[in-house]
Length: 342
Image 1 (cartoon, rainbow, N blue to C red):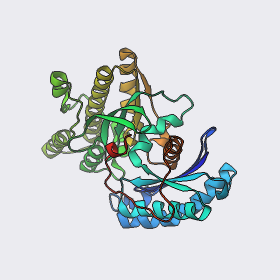
Image 2 (cartoon, rainbow, N blue to C red):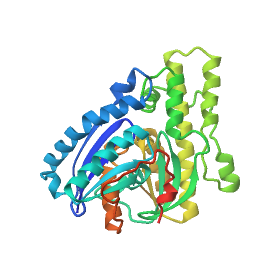
Image 3 (spheres, rainbow, N blue to C red):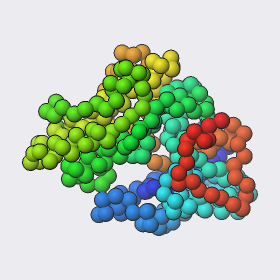
């Protein structure tokens, strides 16, 4: 089974070809970071137009790299949501039109399901069931994953997602777009113990086993510190390090608790914040102490990409899902992952 995967949910155009037996054959990604940098964030209209420019050349590039033509494909998977409506429509229209022309199925994939399953792209993937920590700019969730489409929510953010808090804090510190990676780089030169920042909702974890998250109070604490002092370069670095340490501490503590509560022995970490080196540095020894395994996607697959969409589409088709009927398509800018669970 050969599946073409297309990801256009936000500011990255990702395309990949996945073989159900041989794995990932080829993939390519175009990032719009430079395009949006001068605006300090994603401009939806510019994102959509850039997807239009980039998508067809990337598809041709990936098909050539995989040594196939579009006629060899068995299906086309595309990100149906959540995301920016215009950006999603570019990928959905392209995928559905190409599938209709070839006479194959197009299958819409939930963006978060792609992230959740992305560690399965690796040579030594985890076995079901496992606990998944989805941590990105828009989502911070803990889920019990029993199989494709078998997801149980264990905890989620009540306000800002971890990645969103990273971006907002980076802006407070005068860093550019994208804020998360810039803050992590600045934190490398900082002392995390100079400032004492809160670890939101760890008290409710200890008292009630609550696996939900909240990061808005942590961001507010940084705002207060910024207003109280002059930000020289070292102070900025120390604040960045303290903030990063607080977020990582919370994510690690909640993940350990989720493993304990479910009785499972495997944790996967997916989403853009999963690439954070400090989070990994704290989580790996915590896993060793707790006697559970941690699985990460490769760094290139932590952020949005076509490979995860191709994989999810392939697994969905293998599970018997037929995809959308030819001649029509829709997108869902707001789409709860729970609604795709079997």
